[in-house]
Length: 265
Image 1 (tube, one colour):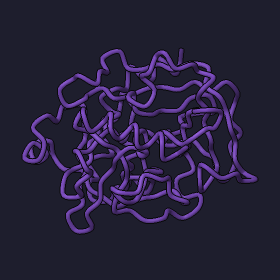
Image 2 (cartoon, one colour):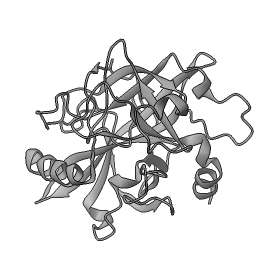
Image 3 (cartoon, rainbow, N blue to C red):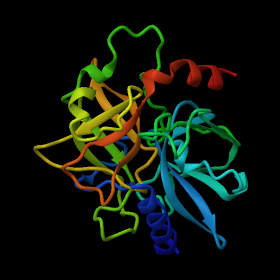
């Protein structure tokens, strides 16, 4: 069942010139990214991993807009799983919650040049319990911040549950992470002419890696003041996931007002 969904999703994205999986990463230590969860979709009675999410608080999570923009799919067909190493396996510490509301950024569109504004908020149908394996993230969404965490460009990570090889579309047994660095948009334009100001580009030329489907909605985190802060939501990479091309992320500091107003409301 997992292979069917990922194969079909791959064919659709190939037509759009975008695919999404993490390639070139390694297993994350258990509990190292406790805010990451698995967004799962029900097909033929079974739930399969679709995208990743980042916990904002005990009622909300962030993900990529393209993960949930099928408006004809019912909310009851989604669930979120937290506190696990493997999203497809059960764990004594896991928490499964449903989704009561999805708020996609109003300017998100698959047809937008460079696919900007790729962001969605997910409201849980029950309150999460925080523990060692499930915690909210620190986000760069403060409207008063004068030194954005993405200025610390040399100590950043991508994290998600996408497949590890371009020819292997199954979900890995462990959460994957890969070190990276954020590059200026002017440098990113040398790779991708479609990059937009509300996006971040991340690339590691020393240990090449990239994302593809299955990693979408996960976090780009950068070290700031001795803590890792989520500065971007994983959005897209180029067709066939070449590790020599940047990963494109939605830049969260560009959406502070929208995020804060919706979560507070």
